[in-house]
Image 1 (cartoon, one colour):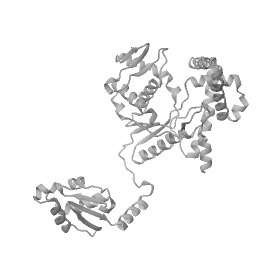
Image 2 (cartoon, one colour):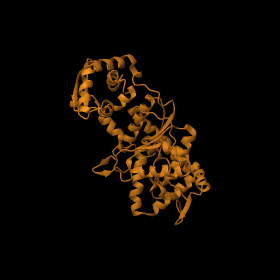
Image 3 (cartoon, rainbow, N blue to C red):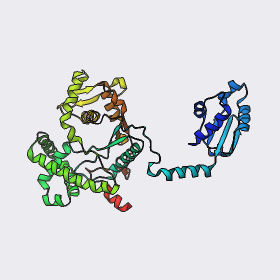
Image 4 (cartoon, rainbow, N blue to C red):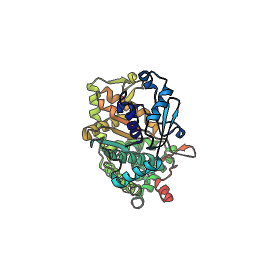
Length: 390
């Protein structure tokens, strides 16, 4: 029995002719200052019933209340302030904790419903930096809390494993990479190649187009490009798992961006069927003015899809796969607008379950006031930080 329940029962014994137990408990307040007790009962609502001033009612009720369960009971104006017996409360709580052990605090408000949690989500072929720590540990903490109260959390590591950067990496590896060095130290070597590509691209802009062309080959299933991509991905996961082991964190799914590549056409078709796509300067958008949001860009002029299209495909896949009660995205607050647009487009499509999608934002980790950048080589490696901490 918590503090309010204890106080409510004692007050109800006195006012049971005029208020129900639920009404008494509803009226109870938590004082802003500890000097005013642990629980306060305002008597304003009884003024009409008793036809007396609230201050007088408070004084009269206090005289009738059994105060043996409390350190003291004080009347301050229209309030009756209750100070709990700390020793008794502590004894009762600790006794319950010891008796129930790891099951202390268990609830089943979740009814075993699934809650996918999009979390961590590093880019393959790059090291996990300090920038990924918050999403990883906040997501895992939420999963533990959800599990405690009866939900089935599904921890999804939505890997950044697709995009033009992999075309650039393939070009860099073929030009300057040494297989043995990459096999011996994959993440560091791949990062060096990625940084080298961008340094040289500043002097040789044609490299950027080579990178885009290599990614188009990857998209079209070129065997050499696919084999390199798979190798980069598997080596990255081995390195990532070392860090996740240090943190004691596991995942239920590693389905990343690449997994949804063949699922975006359905999203575009659904938007067309519902007549939601509009052309705007060669691109295709969904008007979100009804939500006071900018249009959502679904397809670029060249026909390429964008992050929002992929995230819509992921949301629909997760609903079909997990029939989720809630779907959580533990992602930095710089993506808040993106998630507002994502939910709005899904809502326009008639997917009311989009109301059950929630963005869990957090702040940015910076170095010397600047955002961490893999491209510029200004990354604080999470593994190094963890080793220092240990």
